[in-house]
Image (tube, rainbow, N blue to C red; front, top):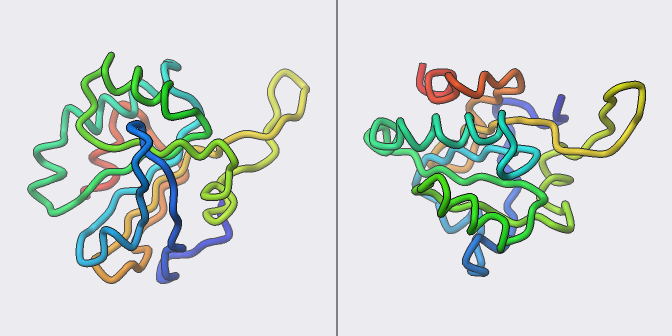
Length: 150
């Protein structure tokens, strides 16, 4: 669970997207943003989540939202993911985990009795003023859009 709360100002960041272009949260001031953190491109659950957002992109845009995905994968991997699944939104390559750290989504995880550091799948819904209006930490990948747009 992230230390950020609903009502907090979303931390601004500067990152690099799949095309090696700079992207900042402050670039989206005046727009609503769906900022979602996911573990890894091309994995089953992450693909279901991204494709759910893709399949509902017209609805998401009609509600005034921009979508930005963040993972620790590099830009090249993001570009392949976007091309393979025709994703219509930008993905940030947070290889140094600085954005993860700002949003408190890089944490210790356990699997099969082993501990490791990884992304905690979390979505932040941010309003036009940059305030967090919802945090989804129990993401249902195949139903994610409906979790966001209630």
